[in-house]
Image (cartoon, rainbow, N blue to C red; front, side):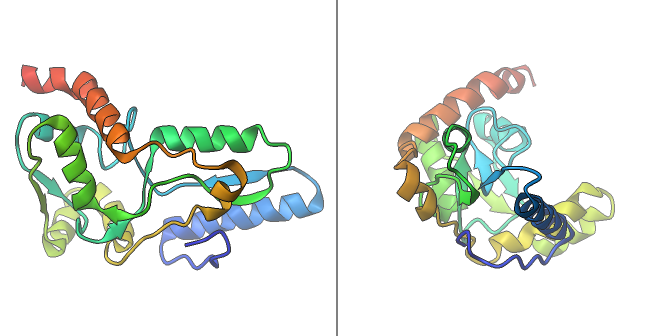
Length: 201
């Protein structure tokens, strides 16, 4: 996906984001506001609560237990490292000439399994990852409504979900942290944030 990719939402959440983007662009054209948009995919990293790599991932990982994921872990997927997102937004915010849409800086897409393997290497022990079958997830959603929201967005892991940040890099250079450095920082944060809770369980 590039900044020029057409808005073609296939979910309720996507439709809302598309309407907001169109409304912002129209406001810019009218001269009501000056704006620049920084876009990112799914997050991981220090402070990443509410992400796929938060307590539901790290508590079992730190305890040496298997993690039941809800998405296909083998598909290529762009994950944005949170400090890279912060650096990207800071660069856009400090640039008076920035306008339009920028995909924020990111490493090339990899599978969730590859990302988890790197996190496991930084942790110093394997992290067992399994997938809850989609049919089981659908049945579970009747009892847990939040899973309906997860099911709605699961298509993003059923085929490659690849973000191109070339426009950002051409203007601001390479602001992306090395993969292994990002993994070590993420594990250090996870130990501090969730390690105590695991030991007390």
